[in-house]
Each structure stands twice: as structure tokens, then as C-alpha cells.
Image (cartoon, rainbow over all chains, first blue to last red):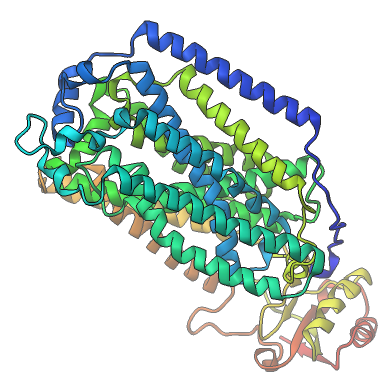
Length: 442
Length: 176
């Protein structure tokens, strides 16, 4: 009964306490220490070099460094592993950040009311984009040759020993200036559009009215059009071009699905954690249930896209396509087989089963388990997509990987908390706020 | 489906908001309401009436599992055991190939099963004698509240008065 709800105060200021800052610094330091340990282990232990034979075969067909090539050109294997790790995390957190903008945009376009009360949470996410842009550009310039085979000039030398006709055919799209230009374009446009919509939102807090709301709808719609294209092209650039011979027409969609559900899990988890700290009192069980449904539905959506891509390739069994999965199953001494299946478990089976019942979607503890499962699961998803083609058999899953992941999480949370602190936690003059406060799906 | 027999008091209301507010008032006064019928769903009415939560979700899960098993059994039996076939160079029993049909049959069984369950449990099967129609205007412009006198300890007059006080414009008696 709508009238039975008592609506708590909407005046809420989030405080980024010194304790929280200290914890994040400690977390980041632990992550950094793990990275150092991981580098030490990788440099001295020497990542598994078994299965060079498969590796060679796989490389020959995926169009990356051919067997033997590695020793000559890939100077230090652990360095490659660092670049690859930075790239995995940067791509992942870029996605999560931009999904914040994606979420507010489609909510504006749909003129959705229910999400208004926690709108500041997705709104705080894209602030991390510039950091990620800088990391990605730095990694590309410093370690691009280790990650992207298509950046090697010798594959384009007609008649040369490394000449690669397929890559030469793709040179019009996959070349360094255009690639870097696109990358800068994505980050500048995404960030700028977020800046504008954020500015509207903060102004609206002061002056109210519906003019800024209408402006936000137009801006959000424009963003969706742009993101519709750039989400696909960035997925090709950031992830698919690591295996430059291979292609899948579903890849853009697939990566967007992955980013989206991870972003939704981050939004849900943040809302839950803010509530546990006494904020967002106005978020009721109906909001949580809708967020839970979002995570539930889009984890199924991701699985659907994942499977649609897998089934076609599996069924057709074309060598140039199936190699992508063969490499993850049997290549590199089968080190990617476990992440491959863990991904499916964490991203589909676990959230599917535990979020299925009605009450689980507003139970804090279950939501937290499901969200963490999705967040870690989609990290693993990007890991299995990026690592085999970049670090290859020098990859692994140890302190190095966890360390980088923790460092990125702490950085992301820091950036988000800084943004949350800047404004009232509930957009108090948003025209849809009243509807959102009374959100009740019974 | 509640069995309908005995004597009923039927309160007819003109406004959804009135009936929504009448329900808690009457329940507080000690009246046991059997059901409220309205031309459209009234938000919050389930809570107000204190009905137990629907178990259709459990039914859906069971139908889904049934559909999943039927699909897998059908395909494994026909493609793998009764007449083994190799399609596309795959094993005759290869799960990835079976997933689309398994998914479809799971959805199909769930959807049909839920609709059928819903109709049966609400007495809406074809040819069913729809004796729940306390007042035919409940399908048009009136909101109708049914109170089973046999289940209430209060007297007919008391309940009738309470109904009128809560905003009912008519109070009728129905005998089944």
C-alpha cells in the first residue's frame, strides 16, 4: 500500500570518511604488494612454457606472433603479463564506468521514475573514465607491441617473411593512428557527455524545474546513439583486435552485455553498501528488487549472447573461428580452461539460482553475494578474452592478477566516493523524485 | 479457489480508492472479507486483504524443470539412443546442440503450465460455472466486496452497517 510507506528524509550527505580513505589506501597497498610479489614470482618462476607446440599451432592460425617468434621479440615475459593485466583491468573498469552513463541515459530516455532515488550512484561512476583512458593509452604506447600483433610493421611488408595478407587487408581499420584516434574519441566523448549530464543534475539540485530534465533527456538520447556505435567499435578495438585474424559479428554486443551487467552489479552493490552504512534510507525493497531483477535478467542476457556466439562457432566448426575456443580449451597447457568455466558459473549459474526467488532480490546478503559473483565473474570474462591472445602461456592466475584487480577496485571506489560526496545523495529537485519515493511493486 | 456456499453480503463501491481504504477499516472492525472484485487491479489490494502470497512461482519452477527434462529426454533418446545420428561431425549426444530446444521447451512448459494453473485455480476453465460473479458490474464500473456470513461471527446488520459506513453505496445479499 503506497500510502502506508513513511518516506524518510531526502536530505542526505555522503561522507567519505577518513577511515574509509585509510581502508582504501591499505587495500591499494595490499594490491600493490601482491603485484610486486606476483612480478617476483613470474620473473623467477618463469610462467609455464609447456605446450609450446599447441601454442605455435594456435598462433599460426590466429595470426599472432608465430611460435619461436616469441623468444626473439617478446623481451620479458612477465612484462607482457603486466601489460596484459593492466589492459584487462582497464578495459573492464572503463566498461563499468561508462555503464554508469549508459544507465542514466536509458533511464532518462524511458523517462523512468523508479531509479531517481539512487541516481547519484550510477552518476558517480563515469568519473573514473579519464584515469582509465590514460592507463589504456600508456599501456598501448608502452606495451602495445606485446599485446597487439597487428601493431608490428613487418606483417605488412609484402613479400617479407612475416607478411600477413589478412592483417594487410584490415590495415585500413587496424592501424596505430586510427586506433589511437578512436580511443581518444571514445574517452573524450563519453567523459564530456557525462560531464554535461552531471552538471545538469547538480544544477537541478539548486534550481529545480523541468528544463534541465528535458535537456538531460536529449543529451542522454544522443549518448545512447553514440554509445550504440562506440560500444561495438571499442569492443573490437580493445578486445577483439588482440586476436586480429579472428572475428565474431556478435562481439560488440557480447562485450556490451558483459560491461552492462557488471555495471549493474556495481550499482546494486553500492546501493546495498550505502544502505548498510545508513544512507539512502529512501531506497525501499521495491527499488532493491528491481535492481536485483536487472542483475538477474542481464546475467541471463549475457549468457544468451555468450552462448549464441559459442553455438554458431561450435556448430559450424570452421577452423578460423573455432580456434578461438580451442585455444581457450586446450591451448597454452590448458591454463584457460578453468577461467573459461568459472566465468560461466559465476556469471550465469550462481546469480541465476540465487536471485531467482522474489525475496532474495531484496535481501542484502544475497544481493551482495550475487553482485560480487557477477563482478568477479566478468573480470574473469575479460581475462579469458584478452589473456590467451596477449600473455598466452606466460599468463597465470596468481598474486599479480589479484593485486592489479584490487588496485583498480580501490581506485574506482575512491573515484566514486569522491563524486558521491559532492552532492546531496538524493537528487532532491528531480521531477521524478516523488514517483521514485513511492515506488511500490508489491 | 474458495468454495462458494452459504449466505453472502455483497458491498458495492463506486471508487477504487474508497474500497482500498474500506478494506483495512473493515478488517480492523473484525469483519472477515472473502474477496474484492474489481474491473482492474488495485495497487496494494493484496496487502490490504492480507491474502497469502501466490505460489504460482513454485508451480512455474516445477513446470520449467519438467520442460527441461522432457526436452533433454526427447533429444537424447531420439538422437542418441533410438536412432543415433551424427550431425555436423558432433557426437550423437552433444549437449551444446540441445540447449536451444531445451530452453524453448522449458519456456513453453512454464508459460502454458502457469496459464493453465492460473485459470484452474481461479475457476476460469472453459465451461466452468462461474459462480464467483457476485455482481456482474464488477467487470464494468463497480468494485465489489464479498463477505461470507458463515465465516463471520458478527451479525448481518452489524456488517451491513459497517459496509455502508466504509463507503459502500449498496449492500446486497447473495445466497448460493
